[in-house]
Length: 202
Image (cartoon, rainbow, N blue to C red; front, side, top):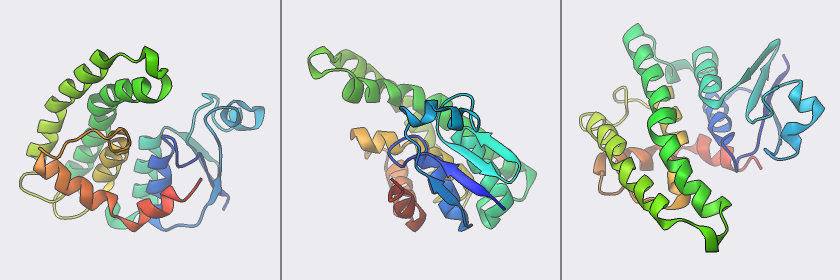
């Protein structure tokens, strides 16, 4: 079966690269940069949005990192995917939560720190985004108060999707150590061998 994952680790594609590495299945990594490569005619035939990542699994063409991870976990991930409907729903909930509650705020910081020239950066935007992140981080901290991972004692696709979104917070140096449960959980997630393998996929 032809199985390919397009993207590079230094982008949002790291989420899906981490996800496929967690499953342990064989695949071809196709290094695809978000500028240039992703706008080529060949790649647009895979993902007409012109964004990375994208997964080809046989006849399936799939984009959006969180959707890719849910698919990979369900089909190839074994215990990575919850078996009961209630925890499956919670995995969906946390996956959507990560991209709706954390990502928009962290992207404000990323844009200011990495895409706006230093002399034009707006420190107030960074400060306000950091302040607004406290609310979802408190929610996450409370959810992790009684268990090491979001769905219990085991790392699942719920943790994978939220932690992979929050890699950007780690990249910009946002300090959430005051949320001790979040810090403990993040340390456990980011120490996984699959992530180290994914980060080596340039």
